[in-house]
Image (tube, rainbow, N blue to C red; front, side, top):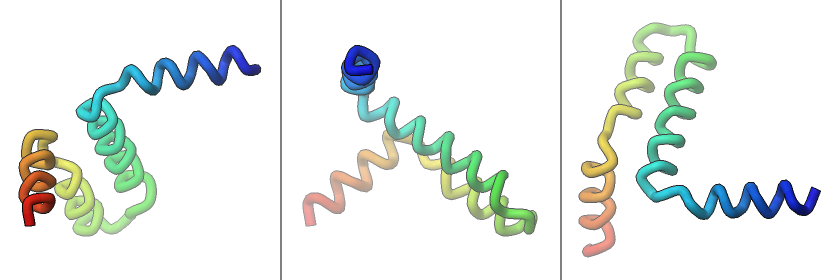
Length: 66
C-alpha cells in the first residue's frame, strides 16, 4: 500500500501546471454534461471551460500584479 501511494505521489509531482489545468478543465466539462439537463445552462457551463491555459496564466498574472 505504501509503495502505491509513493508511486502516485511521484506521478502527481511530475505533472506540470498546464497538465493540472487541462485535467481540471476536462473534469469541469464532464460535470457540465453530467449535471445540467437544460441546454442553455449546459452550453454556458461548457463555454466557461474553453479558456486556454495561456489566457488563464495571463489573467492570473494580472490579478497578482494588482
